[in-house]
Length: 278
Image 1 (cartoon, one colour):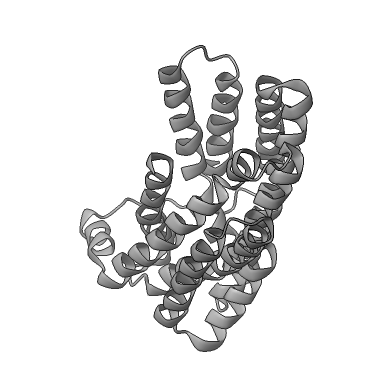
Image 2 (cartoon, rainbow, N blue to C red):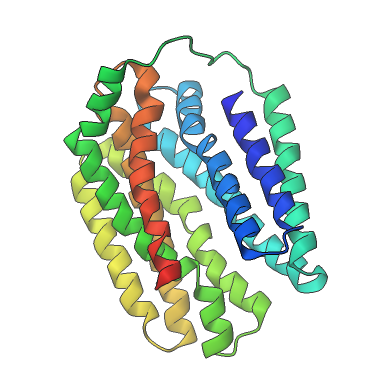
C-alpha cells in the first residue's frame, strides 16, 4: 500500500509538471515527485528481500537495484526520443501515465501480506539515526552519489553543447551511467555477500567515481563514454553495498530495516543538490 501511494504521488505530480507555467510551480511539483519516490525505494528493497530470502542481503539488494536501473535506462532513452519529436510536455505526461499504470499493477498483483502493525519506538528510532556505522555508510554513499550525478545529470548537455553531438546519440551515451548498474549491482551484491566488508568496497567505489570524473574531464567523446562506463559500474557496486550493509547493520527489530535503509539513502541524496549548483 505504501509503495502504491508513493508511485501515485510521484506519477500524478509528474503529469502536473507538464502543465506548469513557472519555475516555482515546477519546483514544488518536482519535490512531490521525489517525495513520492521516497515512499517507494526503501520499502521496495525490504519487500523484495522478504521474497528472495533474508540471508543474502547483497544479492537481494543487487537484484532490486538492477531492475531499478533497467527502468531508469528505458525511461531516459524513451523520454529523450519522445521529447525530441513531440516536445517535453507530452513526454512528461506519457512517463506519468506509465507510472500510474505501474501503481495499479502493484496494487492488484503484489500481495499485501507485508503490512506490519507496530508502533514506532522513538528510542529505537533515535538509536538508528545515531548509529555510527549507518552515518558513515551514508557519507560514503553521499560522495558516490555526488560524483555519479555530476556525470550522469549533465553528460548529454555537455556532449551537445561542447562536443556537438546530436541529442539522441548524446542521450545514449548519458544512459550508460544508468545502464551499467544493471550488471554491476549484481556484482556488488555478490561481493558484499562474499566478503562482508562494506567499508572496503565503499572506499574502492568512491575512488572509482573520482577516477571517472577525471576521465570525463578529458575533452573527448571516447573519454566521455569511458567515464560513463566507469562511473555506472562503481555506482552500482557501491549503492548495492551501502543498502545491503544498512539492512544488516540494523540492530533493532526487522520492522526497522526500512528506516535504516532510508536513513542511509537520505544522507546520500544530499549529493543531488550540489551538481546542479555547480
